[in-house]
Image (spheres, rainbow, N blue to C red):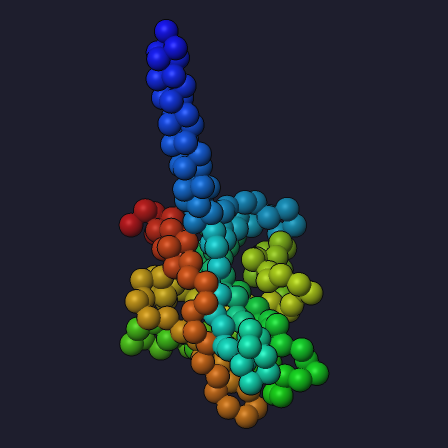
Length: 200
């Protein structure tokens, strides 16, 4: 009898372990899926990517772990059947402004290098509301940062999502600055593109 109880207990523990192992995977899969909602202020149907892409430029001349970042998040806005697509970019940094040496990059031009395709993004402005979105789209941590809203099409988003090599190029008044992919959520962007392409 004791042996049977031990076998049942071991089986229950194994089942519990499997369930616990699958929970993070299920949660991760949910994070990758785009989120759709009816905007409470603009009445547009908004779809946002599950996770943004984050690019970084190391500032080791300032401190060992100091970096400038660009968060890049895709969104789609459906206004009475008229669909538009945007990329929302946030420029932010862990560098102390007193020692950064040169200013943050200009929001335009902003270039996405997706393999051998150079995608120059067109700045629409800084107000998400003008694009039909009243809720922040994946803002970075820390103090509030001004969003930069760029027009884009689904084909460009697909190229970015499927690229093997991905980087950003920004500019200051002095020089061009490359940003390498820091947090890779291309899988979330692929899920976004697939949803907006009708599953294709």
